[in-house]
Amino acid sequence: MADIFQAPLLDGGNVFAMATLVLGLAWFGFWIDQTELGKKTSGVVWVLVVAMGLSNLRLVPFSSPSYDFIGAYLVPASIPLLLYKADLRRVVRDGGPVLLAFGIASIGTILGAITGVFLLDLGEIGSKAAGAYTGGWIGGAVNLVSVSRAVEMTPAESTVVIGASSGVSIIMLMVLMAMASFGIVKRFIPSAIIDEAKAAGPDDEDADLAVEFKLPTISGALALSFLICAVSEVLARLIGMPHFSILIITALTLLLANLLPKIVGQFEGDFQLGMFMMYLFFAAIGLGTNVTTFLSDAPVLFFYGLWIMVVHFIVVLTLAKMFKIDLAQAIAGSGAALVGPAVTAAIASTQGWRRLVTPSIMCGVLGYALATFIGVAVSAFLS
Image (cartoon, rainbow, N blue to C red):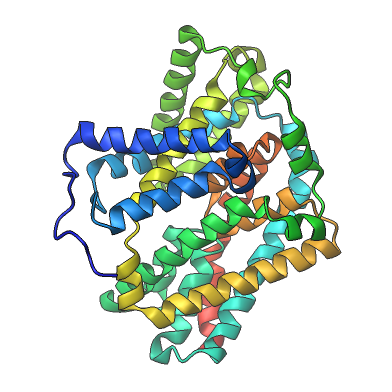
């Protein structure tokens, strides 16, 4: 698709203009969620679609310091806000099926990566791309880059592989967000969790209308969240694993939530504030996605990624049905592999599956720990 405008109408460095755009998209998503359309498809999907449309029509820029700020600071800060009320007893109860779903999802990614190499002509980069995508869609972007270095991709190869993966990842995210609304999927795999979330009324303890925002508790929740992130970043650097700071953020928050429940339990509106930050994150993802780049630079790799996605979801849904895993738990396990812990936590929270937020993060972090090894092994197997 050719650019309609040579340059975007908005300057990415205009902080107020970009803040208006991102906040407006978040508001739009929340508004859509209250409509019949949003209840069937999720407001986040529409945030992504509209954001991608605005940037790919060159009305707004693909990159901005505002987008970087959201990803670097607001996303980590949202994790404690989403976990202050996390009860580890519920994690033990609900985490087992999510962990099983995550294992199934990892198998689906591996099968898709291996079979796709034989179906599509990827050339000499085939085994390397398979390993990189396996690592990226069991762990995350860090694992994709780590595998690409471990299998000795050239800088040009890495750029093409990463560029093609970004478009597929967006499609994966949209499918994950909308899957709970697909009637045929819900009939195939029943979900008590989804039904409970939809049945929750205004008097439910998790309903937005029951939340009372108080400045002392909100400011305290935010201050503690940023403190946890600051301490976690320092500790991650000290142990030589800066990319694993989200694991430490999660661990510290869970310790506070379960050792000092009376203190963090006083916070009100913390979970909803975390959701708000995640909507900003989804808006930034959509705005930063250049559709034409990955379609023009590496179409075969793009379709290879789509093949992996299709096989992944077929395996997940088939085995979830076989093992009687709740659809919401299957989506959480799949998301933990495909899009990582933070984004999967956002999916669970925006869908109203609060009990799945912590298991999603745990499985996603497990993916970070294992995915690089699995990706390198897949590449070696295909070489």
